[in-house]
Structures are given as C-alpha cells and as structure tokens.
Length: 73
Image (cartoon, rainbow, N blue to C red; front, top):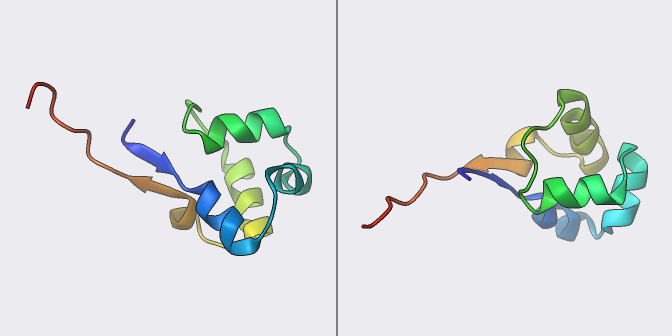
C-alpha cells in the first residue's frame, strides 16, 4: 500500500507504549495495531486528530506516501 503509517516512530520518540497511546486516544489496542501495522483501510479524522494531540505531532509525522514498485520490473 502506498500510504505508510509511522506511528511506531512517534511512539519511540515519545517513549510511549501502544497500550498507553490506545487508552489516551480512546481506541482499542487491537484497532491501534491494525492502523500501526498498515492493515487499516481508512482512518477517521477524529482518530487522526486525537493521535496528533496525544503524540504532539502533525498528521504528516504519522502518514506518508510511497510509490508502489512496478510489478515485474
């Protein structure tokens, strides 16, 4: 998927656990893991805003676009 989620990077910078972040944001650790591991199909703006508030960052610190590699190259 061309959208990469960098929550791990911000968690490390803030020295915060996944469980602590999930609790502060108000989502389940399982749902946070789906997002963190890049398996989410979508993210609500309210959730993104809460992540940014708790992690004291911008949306671009959590999400980035990467071009997909050409198949069969």
